[in-house]
Length: 271
Image (cartoon, rainbow, N blue to C red; front, side, top):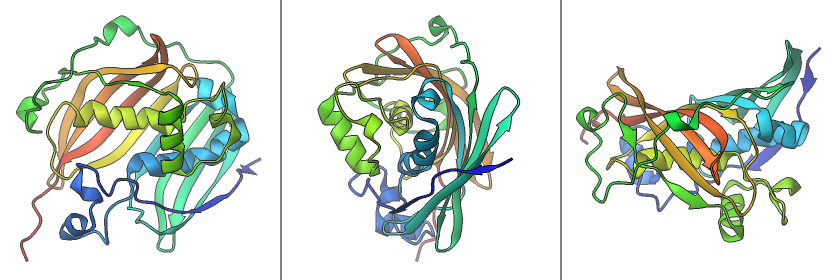
């Protein structure tokens, strides 16, 4: 029998108005047909994880999964309701969570809390590489399938945690204090950096991600994101890239991410 997850209500915030990615700027986003600068996908994902972590606690951060798609944008100031249901399914519990504004559903995540953890992939298959001193333009020729991406490295210290939790407006207690957990949406922020710190992008959109947790990262640990280009494809004039990424905390695998982005948008019609 389905059980409702805790409902979460908030006002969406565009946390990237000063970002290099101009799709978060009102003027540029409107030229591409949106109502304003897009709330970042990682921020929306943070909202979607709130009911999951409130219901399942650290267990989901240690071994849970999620698959998220951003189907319609949230805009700054949107009154947003995050709601979902969970069911016992096979060898675990499955849930579906949606983000809804006044216009309807904007994003959806499916998640699982398996009874037993999955084995992490072989870390040796994910080679670390330096970030480029000068980023080449985001073209298919510079993102060949199998290309090893430069590896972002970031320490999740008290300053970084406070900044991040303020951005995503998450007040859950387990993200605070001496033994705080790293917020799961921070993994997708690192996945974004695995793209944006390796190639020079124009306006671009985080389209979705598939995440598997292996262990929970903690305050004070250093996250390294290693990976490669898994695929490139085109759909309705939009050019997509999918990255295959392994995120480690002090050399311990904590998450695997298939990360999909629209790295080139069709040029908008000129006024």
